[in-house]
Length: 187
Image (cartoon, helix red, strand yellow):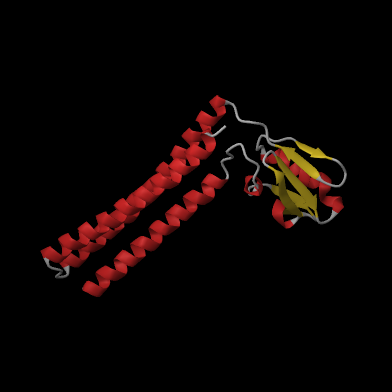
């Protein structure tokens, strides 16, 4: 029984690690006023008859904090890349000079920053829901083991261990959120 409980705690930690990873990926898509190639991670481009992620068709660089530079591997895809960026509706207008596409990142207004903080908090809430869901599964598993003969003391200890893990990961989520919020609110 002790082995099963330890495996359950390890699985719980794994699932919570995945929730935090997912949160961090989602937060990368929220721009904080600084240029970042990850801002284009959701952009799909129609090229050679198929939809492809933009990073498979071009080099994406940030020459400075306010500019993203996109250099296609094949210049014939330049128009398609430009069209893909416009269709992605990420709030950036591409400037095509025949060789590169440049995206100028405008400074964020105070109102927009506050919207982004709300969006960040919503993503954090999704992560916390994942944590609570994993906690519920773990608690249900402990109850099922209790019916199979796990002692009440061991069950209580296991529930406390689960709660401790959940509290640790909730604190990690809060830390990730506060770092992102500070990044967004920094002018």
